[in-house]
Image (cartoon, rainbow, N blue to C red; front, side):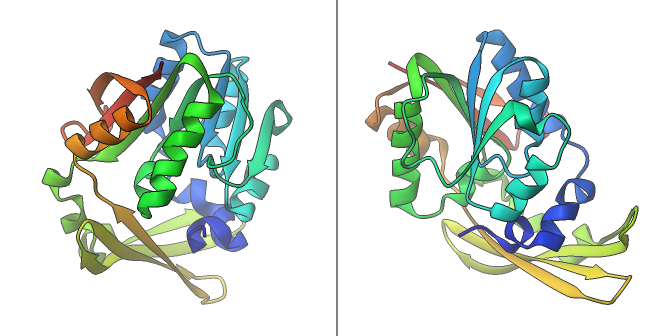
Length: 241
């Protein structure tokens, strides 16, 4: 099931506006350019920001996500007709012959159930052509990112055209290692509505991920630093044999 921030129509409609800086996607665009990707599978495409960036460059993109509200936002954007949008997950995809499969942002860590994680790696492998790349990021557990997830450090008020001011903050709600749960709270000044979205991320260390990739037949090409969070995240680049 998708988190409320992706599935609730009112939250999905402002998701991009609450976090407009998507320079984190630059590294993925660069990798797509490096490998000459002509077809890309964007797993957990959300509101379609990355998928549309690639489509603008003439790349054939398939975006898949379980959150219907986020896909509705994606489909409403200019150029959305260039992308094939699928509601679902990567556990049962046709053979797409993709050159590149991606999981940007928190997507890999949102796959908290071990079986779902393994099935996603398997599904991505099947969707890639031989020699195709799987690229995704995950936070380095040693950097303890959750220590900054508090109201004191995250509280902000964002003014949004035609919506008004939206107050938001995040707080950790449960720690059950390797799972960290947290709640985003949103307050709409226009009518006082308060909405919350609960999320859980699974923190995997580098050794665990390398083992899982090898178990599914991938060859690890590289582990890069995330340009937007230097020293805090791993970006895995794995190739289908």
